[in-house]
Amino acid sequence: MGTPVARQCWRKYPAKTLGIAAVDLAIWKDDPIKAPLLVLVAKSPMWSADYFAYVKTLNPDAKIVEIAGAGHFVMLERPAEVNAALVAFAAKAGAIPKPSPAPAP
Image (cartoon, rainbow, N blue to C red):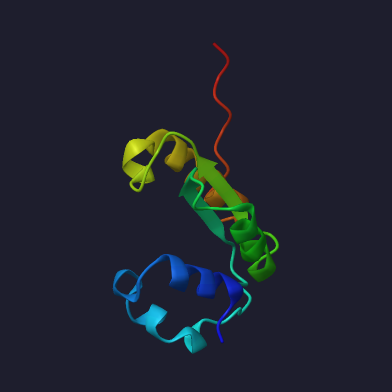
């Protein structure tokens, strides 16, 4: 019942921290994600190669960005890196115009 990743999360984190989704593993599905997908996380042992491989099974084109030197609030701790990753992803997805290259010094 549930995916291997869901079962791993269930064992690692108590239901009270995951909310209702953790209570019923039957609702965890491996449905493909068809929209452009950016996985932006703080570099951590919590995000294993197995996890990223699982993400790629859901969306083979997923862009995975790990930002070193940040914790839970990666967007507050490393705003320049997060913003750069978001702009690059949005531009590649066609959601915004591609940024102009920086002028040479």
